[in-house]
Amino acid sequence: MGRGLGQRLVVVLAILLFAVGAFYGALVIATQVDEVFFPGNGIRLSQPLAKLPGIDTGEGGGLGASRINILVMGLDRRPREGKAPTRTDTMFVLTIDPQAKTAGILGIPRDLWVDIPGRDGGYFKERINTAYVIGETNNHKGGGPGLAMETVEHNLGVDIDHYVIIDFEGFKRVIDALGGVDVDVPSYLSDPYYSESELPGDYDPQEFEAGVQHMDGSQALAYSRIRRGSSDLDRIQRQQRVMFAVMDQALNLDVLPNALDLWSKYKDTIETDINDFQIAGFAKLAADIPQDRINALSLGPATIPWTTPDGAAVLRFSAEGIKPIVDALFSDQGLVDEKALVEVQNGTGEPGLASTVADYLVELGFASSDVVTGNAGIQDPGAATQIVDFTGKKYTAQKLADLLGVPVESVRSATPEDADLRTSAADILVIIGADAQLDNLSAASTGGG
Image (cartoon, rainbow, N blue to C red; front, side):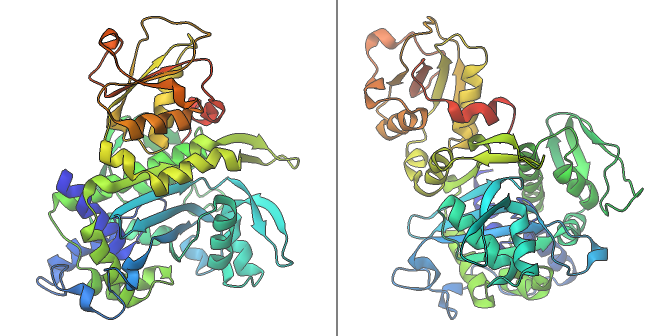
């Protein structure tokens, strides 16, 4: 599927869109529908899109001159509500670096407790999913999108260039157009009181067995939204599973997005400040980004559950906690280039710590296939962390020290005597010691993120 991931990103950036939660690739479904009913219609990506107005992807101007950050929001809005402003059910940042040819996606929990800019120049505390509706109803400059973008910028330190908004119906439409998707469900999930309309008594019980399940649009939406017996952070993971199921199904049909033609047909289903000319530019950028330079992260590891004085259950974070995640989103091309296999061992004796640290590293930008766990041969609860570099991948070794909050002296090159320490063919061995700063692992240890 190496070629497939590159095509996925073409879908992501060509339209950005048909995205509820993390469903960035769904426009390719519409491509299939278009090809069935209008074969041969439209402009293909192989044509010189970069020559269209406003689409220069080279150095010196246009979309390719600097990094582009896009805030994508899925609205918690039902058909009966029309275009009424509502809360965002999901929010994520899509970032593109045209010069480095990299892309990243940062999932933002809807219950994140943040500072929201007020009209008087100050700030007030609320969930991040309220920023859009507050901006719409209070006539904030730029409306709901403006306040949502300002909120993300202030709390995460990320400049936002554009926004994209879609609601439930747009998502269901593309899933059904594809004929449904096959989602790999890791564990049983159910909600006997699930309701898409959320009207009194209007229940649509949902049940998902573990294993690969075929879902239509309504089922995929329910799987992505269920909160009963689950967490906000778990929902982000479920949304990502559906996203990749959507894109895998499109790839199985061997279709490529017809960006300009499809944009003209389906742009009424979303709201965005990205203009028609720029859509073609994003398609060209996507085609230029290699499949191994796409990074997907979540703020989950930097959050902890908290109850407000008013009794609301939210997620708190600290600037220090989110900084490594945001840094990883924007500056971890070194990890991609070295592609080191990392083995994590628990040298403290604390049960489950190696697995928790491994999950944490994945959330901070390491590919899940590049992090394994092993058993430490000798456990000394008071020993310091060791980061042993077997193959000279110094950037990754130093990054591990930074993420674990241990001194640079913890990193050393392997010696012949270290040969038996590994239980895998890892490039780098991390033996977690008592000095590792693991305060941000609480969310990962409870299955969040």
